[in-house]
Length: 179
Image: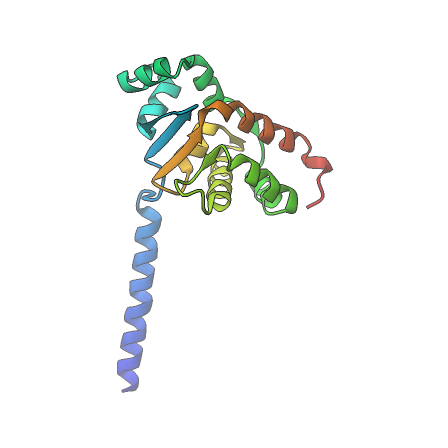
């Protein structure tokens, strides 16, 4: 009986180790795949690879081009909003976002970038922001969207520039914030 418990315990720990190892090596299955981009009353699903290609090359897919034209939006303004950098250390950002001021900022930002149900948007946004900052000590909106931990993320396009300004303002005050 004692040997049986040891064998079962060993199997449990070995199985846990293998599962953990595979989860680390597996691609992030919970990253955003689709962005629902909304301008005024118009909204359209845009795939993350489609938006990333636009950001990296400046080339619009036919569907994104048609949507931006219908919404009467300048593609260059969208590209600029998605690529503006805010330099910030990921660890410091995590600490700030877990403070009272950070919670307030996340509530404001989650009105622009949010989950489909608008529930748990604060947590999802915190995760995406910190993940983005940890990789290269800066945050770009395209990285936040790519790292958003739900398969679909909704973006209020009319207010994209607000996101950058709010993050930049808070980051600019970091030495002054108590956390």
